[in-house]
Length: 137
Image 1 (cartoon, rainbow, N blue to C red):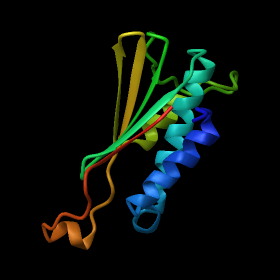
Image 2: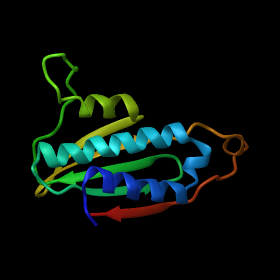
Image 3: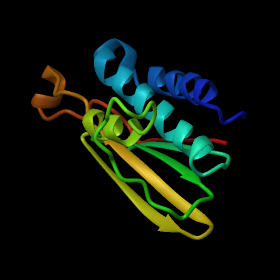
Image 4: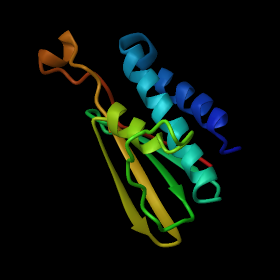
C-alpha cells in the first residue's frame, strides 16, 4: 500500500470504523487521523523514508506506530511565526494521550496512544471492544 499521508489516513479511517470509533467518538477519531498524518509526513519529509504504519487496539488504548529509516528521534518544538513547518510533533503531543519515540534497528518508531472517553458500557465493567492489530506499508 502507498504510505503517503492521505493513503495512511484513509487506511486508518477504515480500520477505526471496524472498531466503531466513527460512531462512538468522532473527535478522538479525528485526533488519531491528524496525528497519523503528521507522523507519516514527518517520515517522508525529515527521514526521507517510506513510512510504515501499524495500529494496535488492546481494548484500552489505540497504539499508532510509524516506523521510518532515520534513527534521529523527533522532539516537539514550539511553533513560531518565523517557520512554516516544525509543528508535527507539537500537534501529536497535544492530540495523543501519550507518545514515545524509540530507536530500533534501521531507524526509529514513533508511537502515539489514544484512549476513548469512557462509555456507559465501559463503566459497567463489561468489555466493550476486542483486540485487533492491522498493518499498512
